[in-house]
Image (tube, rainbow, N blue to C red):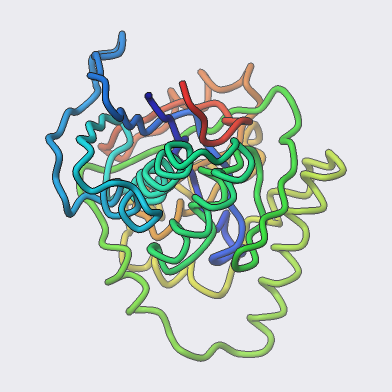
Length: 280
């Protein structure tokens, strides 16, 4: 059995720990079979490392610890693209399927296990359910993303520790800043639900975490500001805890936008994954 779970870009600016998009950059987990390299040749292979998040989630969901797991993924760890969330969803989902659960039950259980291991539910919700997700603890509400959109992702060569980034955030925020971000997180949901994509540029603004994290990464801040300065870009935000920057762009304009991004990092063009975790 080979399970795939998509990567994700979370927070989307103001949706701290609750909003995310699933991206077509997969984490693949093989149980009882060997993986083969994909056509791009970028898959990275690992042995059965018991501390790997996929293996931990597999055991946490009741998987037999003696089962050999093999995984590969082009998702770059530590770049804010949900590597650990996708790995944990894949591991927990595989354990559920092996235990005889149907797809819906295994998927729901995988989100619960993965989100608790992650400490926040946004990445695991997108990796489990696909599309645009709103996560409130164990509950996930999913919306289809309007057709014809892609995500341009810029990633630097250096990684960011999610735990360290979270520790740098203040324990209290001003009431006005909280209200500012709540309104824009709601605007994200309404824009995706209604197709009013012109609202997204304002909806990706945030005063809870994004500006503080970008102060620590001037290279990422420069890329984010560049993307927001282009009329073709619908929204641009710090992906998860960073340091990657993601932007929502009409698919036919992606080459123009992707080609304009500098900053010394790598640029990917990704589609929205609408399916979430599944058996390949």
